[in-house]
Amino acid sequence: MTEMNLIRRIAWSYSYTTSLDIDDLFSVAAIGYTKALNTYDAERSHFSTWAWINMKHELNNHLAGMRLDPHAPRDCEEIGPEEAVSFKETVNSMGKEAHEVCEIIFESPHEFLIQGKPKLSQGRLRDALRERGWSWPKIRNGMREVKQTLTQMT
Image 1: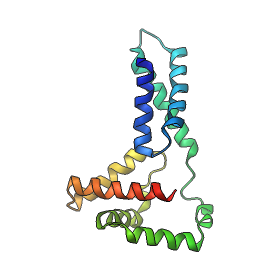
Image 2: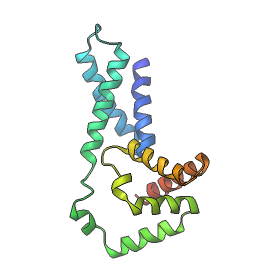
Image 3: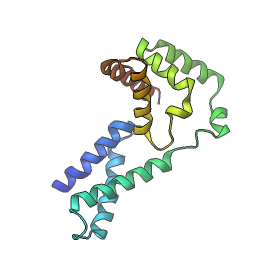
Image 4: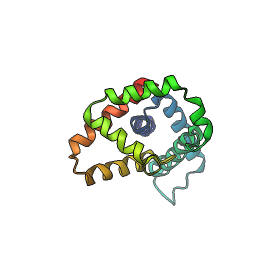
């Protein structure tokens, strides 16, 4: 049962940070766990450490495979004028903090939207907000509203 909890814990952490379905992430983590069973060497580490590393590697590969190149021109072609207007209206309807978070990202997307590294992206955004004098609760509220709004749109 400890194994299931280990798999569940890492799947939940990835689900929390990416908003992807936890069942799908659990399946990917279970594949990593199985690979860890087959390659474990007791002399090198504890099994839980080795399993965690393998599951994390498998999940990161899975996420990297899902990502599209943000610089590809076809991304812009897929968004029609109606969708662009709808997105702008959605951003404008957000609260003050969430709207400011979006504006900061729109000012320099390459700085804050790092392909395959959501935690690094969030960290950079938090640092930029702190430099602008934002409090931690204000940062949490703004980022939470953006995440909830984007989740509702998809």
